[in-house]
Amino acid sequence: MEQIQVEIPSIFEELSAVMGHITSNLETSARRITRETPDDRLNNLRKAILAIDAPEVQKQPPKQRHMEAWERFTAGLSDSLDKATVRFLCWVPDVATDLRFLAHITRTNHKLSRKSLTGLVHSCHTRWRDLSPEDQALNIIKALLLRHGGSDRKLARWRGNTDAILGARGPRILADTLFAEPVGLAGFLRQWQLDPATPFCQDIVRAASVLCRNHIARLPSDMMLVYFRDLLSWPHWDPVILKKEIGSLILQKPLPEKVRAILERFLLHHQQFGDPRLLVNKVNWVYVPAQARERVIRWLNQEVPFVFNEHVYQQGKGWVWRQRNSVTAPLSFEREEWI
Image (spheres, one colour):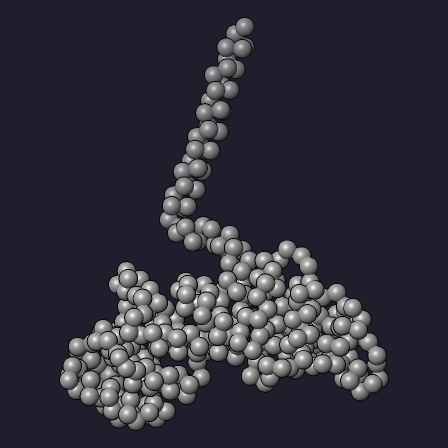
C-alpha cells in the first residue's frame, strides 16, 4: 500500500513534465505561425490553386530525336511517327500547323491528349499572323478539338467557342467579351487559358484597346481602369503599334477632360514616352503622329509648365540625369480611386 502511495506522485510529476513540454512546443509554434503572413503559411496551396488555371506552355527545348523523326517522315524515309514524337511536335508551331503532320494524325486516328491539343492551339496562336482565315490547318485542328471528349474545363470552354479560339474573328470576339466583362486582362486570359506572349493575344489586346478608344467618351470607370492599367500598360505590345494607338487616342474626338488628365499623367511617367518637350525623350515619340505629339505639348504648356531634369547621384550608376515633374504625380491604379 505504501509503495502505491509513493508511485502515484511520481507518475503525476512525470505527466506534468510531459504536458509542460507539449505546452511549451505549442506556444513556440503559435508564435512562429503568427509571425508569418497568410501567403507564407499557405504558399504551396496558393501555388496549386493558381496552377489549375495556368496556361500550359511547352518549356523543354526541342529534342533532337523527335525533330530527326519529323525530317525522316517529310523526306519519305518513314511513314509513321510514334506517340511521343506526335506529343512533342504538337508544341512546335511550324510542324503543328503543317498539313502533312495534321493529315498523319487524322489518317492514323491518333488519340490526342489534353496537353497535345493545347499544344496544337498554342501553335496556331503563335503563328496566328502567318495563317490565313481559310487555312486548312485551322479547320483540321478545330475538328480535332471538337472530337475530343472528357471533362477538362479548358477544352470544354474551347470546344464551345471554337470561332473565338481558332476563328478568323477570334481576337475581336474575345475583345468584345473582355469589353463587356472588365475582369482585368490577367484574369481574362487566365479564364480562357491563353498564353499572353502569342500574337493571338496581342491581337486581342489591340482590338480591346480600339474598342475602349472608340467608346472613350462614355467608357465606364471600371473599364477605364482596365484600359490604362492593363491594356495600354501591357508589356507585350509591339512598340510601334503602341505608339500609333496612343497617337490615335490623343487625337480622339471627343476626348473628355478627365480622360485628357489621365492620359497626360500616363504619358509623362511611361518609360516609352515621357515629356515630349525634353530632348532626351525625342526618340520615344518618333512613331507617334506629329499632330498628336504637338497636341500633347500644347496640353503640357498650359497645365504642366514646371518640368525639368535634375542631376542626381544613384548608387552603382554615379551622377545621372533624372526627369522631375513637380506638378503631375504617377497614376495610381488602386481600384477605389477609379470607381
